[in-house]
Image 1 (cartoon, rainbow, N blue to C red):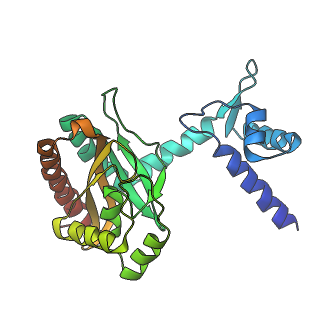
Image 2 (cartoon, rainbow, N blue to C red):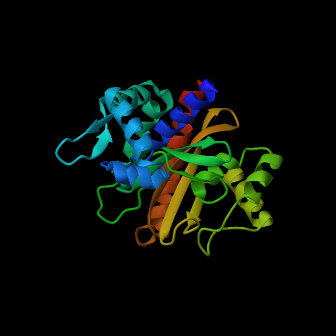
Length: 252
């Protein structure tokens, strides 16, 4: 029973920490308790414990909580120890600087893709997603570049769970399989408003070993800036990055 209680408390503490994001950097106890459906007393005990362990900080004047120094330290450790991210960032910065569009790296987690690294455009008109955001593998160029080399059984499982995001989301199994075959053949993919209206994405796979993508890198932004000529230039630049970075990761 004690083990179950401890596990339950740990899960609640993790849920509290997950309340914080780029858009919600400071929260009150009431916001946290209501957002998670916790009694005020339970929320207060968890928050106090997290503050004591430096996972959270509490502003005594505003009574608002924010992530503490230990969370920041853990984030720095994770970033520094991630070889894939460290190796990919110079290539991503090169793409960002050339096109001034947001460049994202995604990795596969189960049947989803996770935004793992980002180099953001300086343009005020942009499309960026928070790090850690998860999306379907079957919708969008970056997802296809991770899914295309998977087994047919796995692909069918992912397709079965796909929900439409826009009127451009490809939902028919035959068309999805054709798009994945095209991705394997061309080593890139382009999507037009498949996950979000008005957004174009161009992506390539990054191979950690021959025939096995470990990540995908995409350039995404407003469709008004993605002319056919620009998309063609992006494809060429992305394929160059895919070749160079994949060779490094594969040790060739």
